[in-house]
Length: 152
Image (cartoon, rainbow, N blue to C red; front, side, top):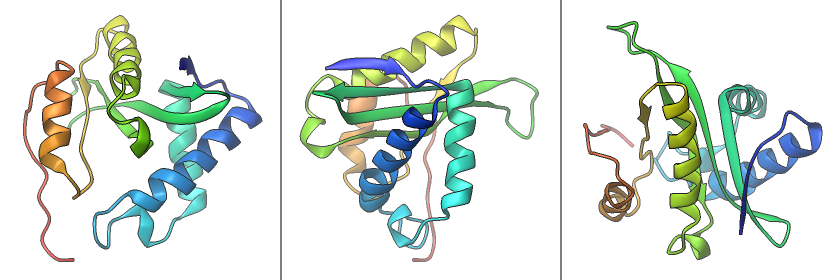
């Protein structure tokens, strides 16, 4: 497995966009908010571009993307304190018990630390949240809240 930062090239953008659309997009389950409910490709392209500008990495194996994380800088509405958060953090199901996720997250953490900013990672998926929380905690992150949804 090789981890590398996404470059601002057409080839990298297309490979990452395809990976997210055909993998993350098909699996992301949040009812009506899920990426599997239909995708706004122009909006998604802007989102991916924003994360590439700030920081995005892929894990590759035999030339195939098996995982990716993209982060961007933001601030809470009540503060001017900047932090990085994930635009996505996705690993193919068959690689989730390997070191792919922790390696990708490690790159994002190092980058945020170099910029002297906190990193906030979210779980926006209704499947297997308890195990995802445990995995993030094993990777050294602390639970600071939760996301809840009413409706479908």
